[in-house]
Length: 165
Length: 419
Image (cartoon, rainbow over all chains, first blue to last red; front, side, top):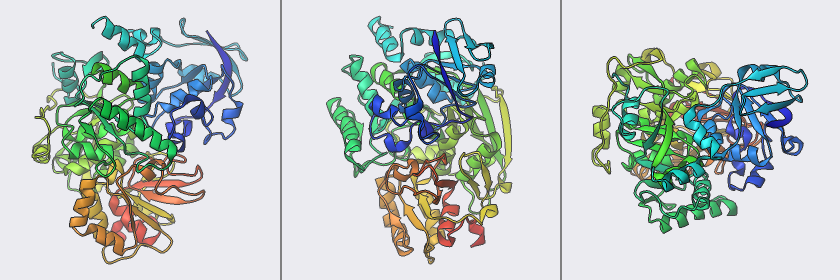
């Protein structure tokens, strides 16, 4: 169960906005988090608090493959990203590093900046604590559940290689 | 079962006779690629998971191309991580500065990727290699780490979209204009999670370098991969360069496509993608009021020899406008050498361009040509997002080399036919 305050962004939020390339000369999570979303909102790294939720529109995380983007989001303490759709490499990266993401079109339309939400990832339910509205979202395909339940791809691969699969 | 080329390549690498769109598979990779931005994270993940051996030192490829020659101490440390790892694991495909080029220009040029391959790269423009008839897709660093250890990647088999180009290309129109026409039509998420297959008579006659440009920008429409079914042009290109024997796959006549889009090549003009998305496509001729501070010719999209030839043809005997900085970055050392041998570098020097080293540099606002606030660039690169080439209040217009060169001469966005 995840509960947090919402920061809302628009469509096509790209990874250059999430973490500009000028900061990619490091891969340290805390350093990256210090510049999270700063080209979209210069004060964001200061304003965001652990547990907060990012809500985006269509094609969230498009552009560069940089895993620095979900790493920065995770390291800033963001508990979940909800979007109408995710760009495919960002989607992979989030699943692979264990950053919770949710695809929920109705929820994005029904949640505004500053609202608080709680999200039950197992039950597939988002509740807007300001409006009382509830939204459901489908579970990820079974093939991805193995990676998610292991907490990420490396644990999953390690386990399957050890088991000789 | 009728299959597309993308489905056939994935099936062959998943040990299956056929696969269907939407299925998840674990596929064997022929090449797993990382660069000086993405590989350090992969190397860290690889080590933290306790792995000490890569699955195949000939198939794990490291290309230090983004912040090289290193722009600062931090980026030098990142490159060192690649260098040390490559030495320790005796990787056969690591190139030091002086031999290294922009990864997606370098790998096809050196024959590292061949037709029929399944390639993953921790770089979104890995989709470039579809031009030689490979399935190639961008992934993240953890995917790379997992593939370095296991030789495998998880994939959801993409639905395929077909893009058919017929008719004769106009003068100064190339692969960049073709792909901008596509992205302008379908948008930056128009091919999300899908394969983009390029066919038709105008693709059949399109040179390999233009095909590389087209597949390179498939990701700008959200696609998983771009691909051109291999043909005689592919076979000719691979001659003398392929490290391994390729497999030429082709789509079945009755393969399934979720969408088909047709283009008349004769109607495509020199195009430009305006800030701040690659889908904001307009004819260069409509933008002649836009003043330009910097022009960049280079990158994995358009830094190849044919791009430099096109630019030189327009620039020869002219001068770069006094208010413009023209940066030319040949994408690999071989291209640099060839441009020197053909006298292209002399032309660039004569017109007062600066000739840079093979690096991604300015494309991502890394180094070697960042923009100040309020400045405008025309670039043959692939992205024009907010802040992509430097200051968040700078602007990037994307074009092919002909528009870029013409704009460098006039100081405003210019259709080369107007010169």
